[in-house]
View (cartoon, rainbow, N blue to C red):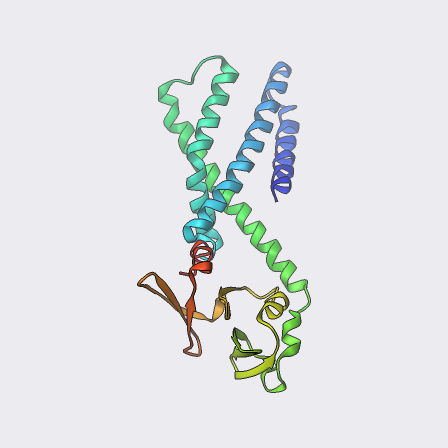
Length: 238
């Protein structure tokens, strides 16, 4: 992921450097190109870190626009410092105080726009890839009466698994760990040693007494163990 982000930043910097060949004095081309590459590389890494921070704050599952906007806000302050240091290094002196508000405002807008665009592109690429992938292997294990149903949850019961679906429930003989491996491609998570839950099946999340409980579309109450609670909070489930 980091290498891909840096590669994109390199491409942007190279494009801007190419455009600079047709504007300004030739002597300043090298300096401008160095600034473009520095800003692009540092900005790419700051953007990636900001998206991860925003995701841990619970914005991962709250829409691409909101995730990108929050990431841009997080990124703006350190990127503003980078721009200020770059301008100081380029001119040999710090920019005048009167220029700082405009510089910070432009940096904020660019950070938000770039973050939103990056998140939208990444989500679009992921969505296209998921559509082109074969259905999860686990769906082949559904009993005939449940074929074509949405899988809402998988619950371990002794050596069996109870399937919670949009067409009802049934039991199959399989280990939960094997089922989770075969559920790849469906957005969901293990929330307890005995439960895997689909994200779309959760209609309510309740927290109290140090515990969390998820309510599913079929009314099932699913406990969230402390082992998985932190991960689920980071993804905005609870």
